[in-house]
Image (cartoon, rainbow, N blue to C red; front, side, top):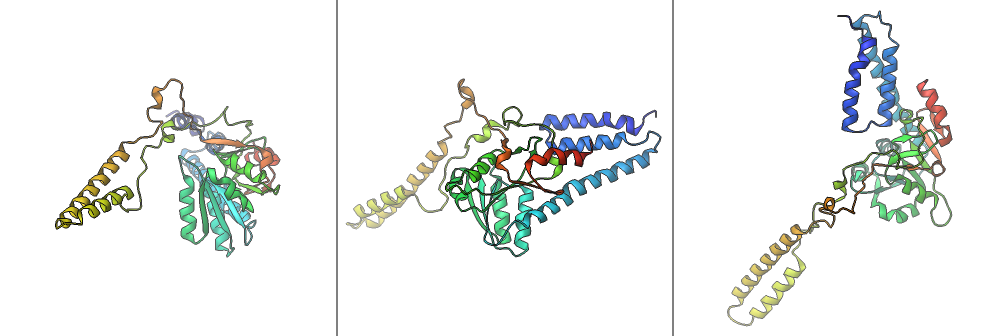
Length: 336
């Protein structure tokens, strides 16, 4: 009694939004969605019946998801896929969902091209993308970021996803993206590789980003530590144990007790392999216990900023545009 949905719903929503932001910093797209929802709530006439107001908000939310995310991704993928030609070598970084959708669509259209995925630790998002594309039948090459010079050498286009596009035309995306874009523009031989960013307008922001230090998301530093020791994955016996076994067998092969010596050598080899495995498991990362060192800090940032001059085109649901047009399109899409 005495409550009105347009006047009081935002108060209840604020508690939920605060909880979400304490769990993890809100993304640019989340902030834009929240502002759009609050604007829709404020536009409802206070005299509107509650059931009608709820129906209006439910329809608005469904429409927002459909237009700004679902259909937007389909339009972007269709537009970006047109830029892929037969014989292209497409380089991408990490595991953008819209880039994955674009590559799968181009492959479905019958285009013959190769994909080179560059990945980095600790998230290794590119592994999932590589597995999906390879399963779909694409020719995929996977490498970590330290092999970028080799991967970019044969590239004809670079497709990147985005966490956000800022008002000064800079790309805010997964850390390592700036290195890939810079490598494409500074490739040996002087031939630049076009860098194409696929980004929905809901990820546009009026904020200005100059670097990735002032505003960023800090992930758990312990993710940078290699917790699991290196292990032999081939299933073959340890070479050192095999050598020792062969030497022991040769020594004991001259007498009648050769069979016993061979059995003893095999047992010794098994014991050596077990000891080797135990030793490997006891070896930990050099960074283990880093918190105890007063002059050592680990920084695990989630995003970096790519300068606008390293981006040739931004493909959105409203068309393909240069980075300098981001603030204009943002004002048009938000109507704020």
